[in-house]
Length: 197
Image (cartoon, rainbow, N blue to C red; front, top):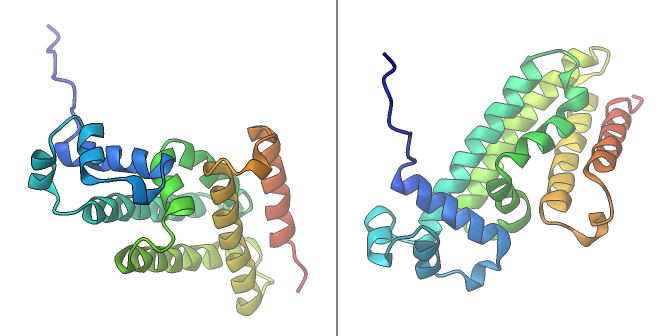
């Protein structure tokens, strides 16, 4: 006998955060009101206020969750193989496709949102940078720490710039296919990692 289980339904908080991220990924933040987030969540503003006091709190919750997932994904991928750092940027761009709204807000629309968001970005980037430095040193043991640190910082900049361009539908990338973009990103990563001492 097969027992039917109820389908897992996301929590109301999760639905609110997902709705807010969809809006922030597609519209100017100044145009988004709590009422818009409530409507996107299919609830009243009063019901939304039961869960969150402000739209900034909603956004901070969503971006903090994305930051934790981003750092965990980068760390796990880099630990999977000593050569993983060579494909890190392409891997993360692929991973971001499944969390496109949150990634678009994180990389393309979160500048200057709040000091709390900036603190989360700074802490996350420091954590990921530390993991990338270790991965560069494993892949290129001949690199002294300063060189490995610069290579890692360049890879971090590549992640940021490439994600921002791709996720924000930058008009400079509008005529580039996803495959061509990934190929170019992989080539640039290889050049960064192979920069001579």
